[in-house]
Length: 47
Image 1: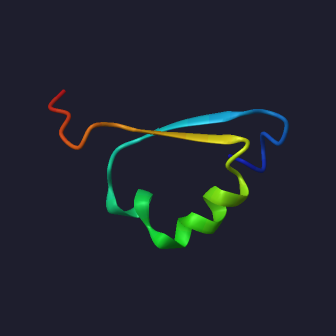
Image 2: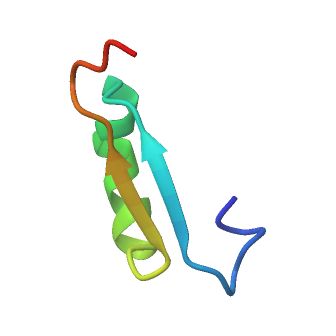
Image 3: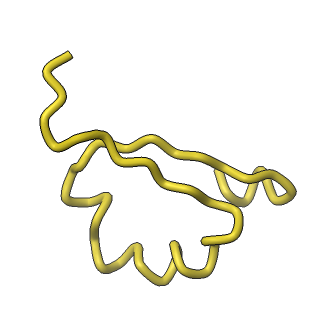
């Protein structure tokens, strides 16, 4: 998604799955922090 939209700012809405907080993602997120915003849903979202 980031490679396909090089000129756009991307906003991603994520649940709080463990993979979304993985250490493996930290370098990628730092590198793309100017173009990428992450919004995490609350830990408990019944609906």
